[in-house]
Image 1: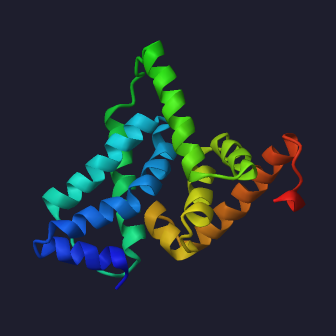
Image 2: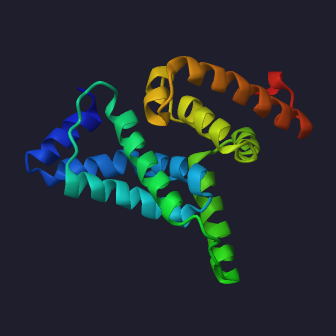
Length: 185
């Protein structure tokens, strides 16, 4: 049983510190992952809160068939998909919100991705289609296996491997346009 699973078990048994540990360990990564779906860091933060709220209120059963992290990210993905379905209309945003969004997104990204090369890779990643961006994020930034990624994205492991191949190829082309060669990173 991994740390997240043991923390969740303690939470279910009444220890609120278990939930606190889960939030501390998974919050930042989950926010950045969900930002890949909604392209708004503030909404991604809200969706992350909704994911943890779902753990508190519904207390879904963790079966242990995958890692706790992949199970939690799958719940987060479902929350994001529900949000997108319900809010598919154009959202009006004030200029002040855009400025705040830009400032906060930069500081969050810079604290999470420290090296300059990784920032450039991250920017190129953001330009990819959502499906490519998500598979690359889960495998390379969150260190999920192909099997775990397949569970999160509700695809077969073979589909993930094919998707990963195409996503890496697309990312490589984007980086080459920016002047990077594959050997540099």
